[in-house]
Every structure is written in C-alpha cells, then in structure tokens.
Length: 354
Image (cartoon, rainbow, N blue to C red; front, side, top):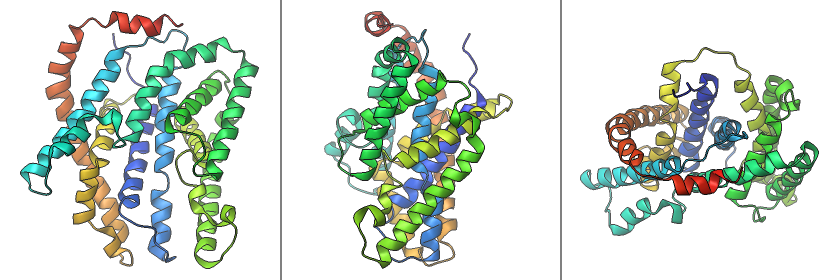
C-alpha cells in the first residue's frame, strides 16, 4: 500500500513553487533597474525568495531519502526525464500552432536533450543528486556524528566562499549535495538549533537578509564603495549562504506544522514540478516578456497586480496541464510500460551500496 504523503511537507512544496514562480516572473522580465523606486522595493520584497523555494525542494527530498533502508528505483528518474520532455515538446507545439515564434529542429532537440543543456538547471542537478543519494546515504550512515558535522561545516565554508566570490568552484550539483548532507545531519540531530527556533529564526533571517540586500542595493546605486559592501547579488543568488539559512528555518516551520493530511493539498503539490517545467521554459519566458512586459509598468500602480496576477494564472494553467499529463498519460500509459520492464540490475547496482 502506498504511504500517504504528509500534507505539511506538500504544502511547503506548493509555497516553494509559488516563491520560485514569482521570482522568475520578475527576474526574467527585467534588466537590472537602477532607480530606487517604490515598485522596485516591492519587486525585491516579493520576488527575492525563489531561491529559498529551490533549497526547500532539496531539503524535502533529503528528509525523506536520508534513511538506512532507502531503496533506489531508476523508474523515478525515467519518469522525471519523460515529464521534462513532455513539457518541452508541448511548449514547442503550442508555439508552432499559435505562430508565436518559429520553431525549428534546434528548439525541439534542446527540449529533448534537457540533461545536456541549461534549459532546466534545477532538474539536471536534481537528477544527478538522486543518482548520488545511495552514495550520500552511505556517507551519512558510515561516518560518526562528529565527523559528519565537520564535513557539513567544511561544506558550509565552501558555500560562504561561493557567496562572496561569484565564480567560486561550487557547482549546482555540489551545492545540492551539500544541502542533502546538511539536512541529513540535521535529521539525525533531533531538536537541533533550527528546529527549536524555527518560527523566530524564519522571521529574523528573512528580515535580516532583505535588510542587508536593500542596504547593499542602496549603496550600489548611490555610493561608490568596495565590492563586498555594495553588491546585493551576494545575498540573493544561487549558492548563497543567506538563502540556505532562510530555507532551513522555513523548512522546519512546515516540518513542525500540525495539519491533517489533505488530498487536495497533496494533489496540487503533485503538479508543482510541472508548473516549474511549464513556466521556466525559455520559450514561455519569451512569451511572458512579450505579452505581459512588466518593465513598462514599473512606475504604475498596476505593476504588482499584473505580476502577481500573471503568476496566479500560470499556476492554475500549470495545475490543469499537469493533472491531464498524470491521469491521461503517465498513470495509464507510462506506468504500465515501465512496470513491464525489468530494471533490477540497475537498481541492484545502487541498492547494494548500503
């Protein structure tokens, strides 16, 4: 019998995807705006937390996969790759039939060979992380607690280095490995600092991070001071230690949340990856920039409403499309085909590590 998903974590998936969607809607619409206007401040406050959502997705995955009886199943990765291809081809098809833009073989190939390009950096890094999970679990459960703690501290120092130096040697995959080991260590350390101080730490870390960001942004636009004091991208970017800390507190807020399991929450949560694959496709971003064109309204009262309204519309469309994919394609067709294929040799290669 399939175990029912915990709705508190599923609700976190939904919140995380909303954060990512809002972040992308603004981030992909603007070149860096130099004016320190009211809407610019609102834009920063609303859209800055997409990277927190990314970290939370990795933390959720780590929380449920860090276990000694973990069972690797290659079908999980195959279904993920097929889902990515489905959305890539769907977007190409819609652009073709609506004559929005010319679609050639290069566009189709790009959307099929997703592991070999940067179309979806998160998916590529996540797939490699899943392949590494048996090895990482071996590390987590082989090391004693103190040694594992030292490893996590060392990787945290690397993350701080990458926060300061944009081109530091820390890739997305290594960063995901770090997040996995971090949540693995914390899972084995009940009542840790982040769990004890989840709500207070969440509020304080968010206030601190946005305050530092706004201060750096102000100094960047009004004063010429050293790089480390005037570069707001140090705070809100991939691999930033600020984002990691905010994500940990937010994760534990939802982890400690006591709510009944909800079929509705779990159903919506199951579509979150599809929403990401739909809205972050480069062709969809081009469509959004063409028709919504948020920079045009940056000084208008409609600016925030247009941005948030556009995100809500994409979120709903994404839910509908992914439910169609799940119940009309994946469950009746893909699952039946994959269940007839014997993947035991591949699965045993990974499972025999533990």
